[in-house]
Amino acid sequence: MRYFVFGLVLVLASCKPAGPPPVPGPFAKGERIYYSRCITCHQRDGSGLLNEKRFAADFTDPGGVLVRQDAELTAIIMNGLEGRYGRMPAFKPILEEEDVAEVLNYIRFTFIKSAPIQEAESRTEE
Image 1 (cartoon, helix red, strand yellow):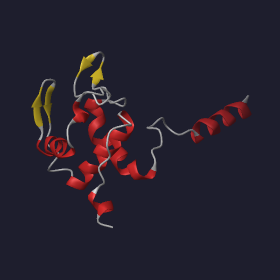
Image 2 (image 1 turned 180 degrees about the vertical axis):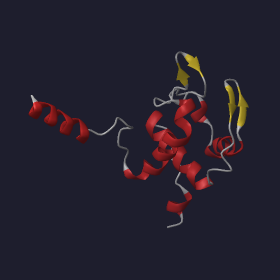
Image 3 (image 1 turned 60 degrees about the vertical axis):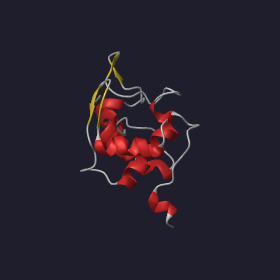
């Protein structure tokens, strides 16, 4: 019995906590930003729903917020917005525009795969 418990402890210790599914390299930074800054309101699935109550824009709606141009979405992210579902905070003090481009790319890739991708400034200058 002692060996069984010891073996079970070893197996459980080697398990990784549940987290986001791995994302291809070009979207890794955007994924980190999404999971640290956006997930609380927009949720893991991008729906913006928590217990069937909408807290934020729905990224999964094909005719929703992601049909807007990146410049408009960047301005909203940087400056915040008083919207239908409450106040989106301004991330200008926290994120650079390059970070916003990265998270927008991740959001478009993850929730609406057919949405256009904007190159982050760091990659377009190379």
